[in-house]
Length: 75
Image 1 (cartoon, helix red, strand yellow):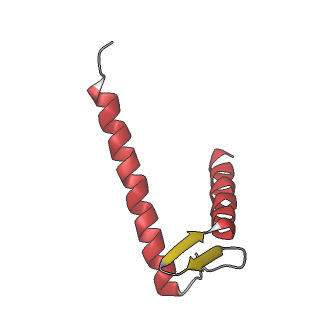
Image 2 (cartoon, helix red, strand yellow):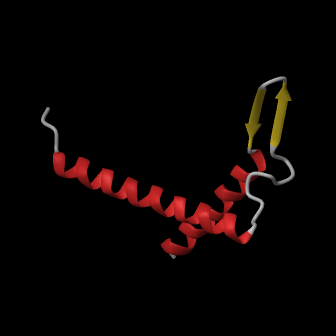
Image 3 (tube, one colour):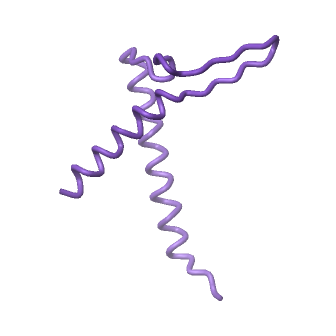
């Protein structure tokens, strides 16, 4: 089996572009004051010097938004 470096290159470029867009989105949301990561339903457990954060509701909201966006783009 031989490696197809062109496919790997395209995959890396698209993955990098998606990560860059997510980073820009995070910066914009932070500057707008949107409380992503501190919604009701996000779990934070603090025991001594250990903090565990589980953004359950934030992940649900992001999932719904992404699914609606993909659905709209496919129409």
